[in-house]
Length: 407
Image 1 (cartoon, rainbow, N blue to C red):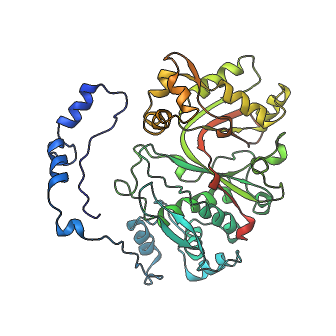
Image 2 (cartoon, rainbow, N blue to C red; image 1 turned 60 degrees about the horizontal axis):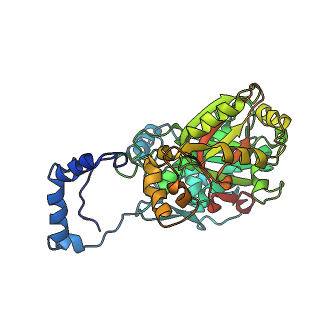
Image 3 (cartoon, helix red, strand yellow; image 1 turned 135 degrees about the vertical axis):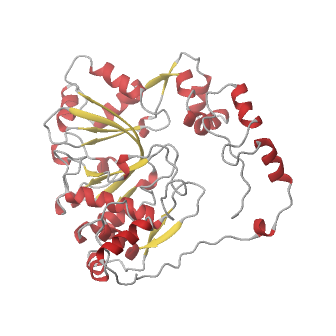
């Protein structure tokens, strides 16, 4: 529907009084500057025009090769067309793309997956060669390519267009970490390792270029944006962890190389411990400050993980259970939230558990925010400080892909 008739009311719609909401309806559409209710009536009752009935197509006829030009001009061309993250790229010449393709046994024209910038937009399909082009642009080395293909195969975009400004974090497990010299120690979540940085950048570039764009005010609507969207890929420090790694928890063998992506990145809580007597209070405070709809991914330095073992949490699951039991919020705070109102309340009204019980709770009753299976823990860091982070990270069934399958 290329000319779908629209009428717009601003956000927020959660937590406002009936009078404030009525003012939205009775006022002007802030985009069209016309009375909202009149726009609505006109749009529903006006006869369809030829433009309304016309189908829509997207131009995907971009040639496989660009015309030769200077390096400066080509860099400007890529930037002008929103094909970059606005930093200089490695120009994807035919020879460079061919070298990247040698790192996988898969055919260049094999379909890797499909992506969309946000829900309700169409999916775009992409091939191994198209992923290779973006890997070259990001400055990745050929030996990194199977990891990048695995990320592309998740079908989870690194350029989510939600107004909430989500990003996507990726965790790498298994032997591939050492084969390509990924960092899981000091500075693990920073720009201190070529593999971590360029793989994360490639994931972002392929997402925006192979899903139909990521242009602010067109195909990207995140209000604040998100720094994690630049490059948020890191390896778990399996050798220094006292617990089983993430991919083994998910049923894989330790010898498997796996990527796991977490949709979120909206909030980050940080702290130290559990070396002091009040660590439980600090963790409870941090958990209660997390987004009720978006469960936390806990990234713990090995010092922290071993500190928990010393306190009796000899498995990740025991710590996850403690977090699930102690991540609590008063019911009125839990439901006074845009996401719980729009996404979880309908489930609660329909009787879906545990949301139905949460809806029945008294306003000041403390209710659990997350299910046990929604919380995840990764051990990473260089043991220079007992630091931890809680980062919004939603993990679903299709978010884990084998790297070995893309060698």
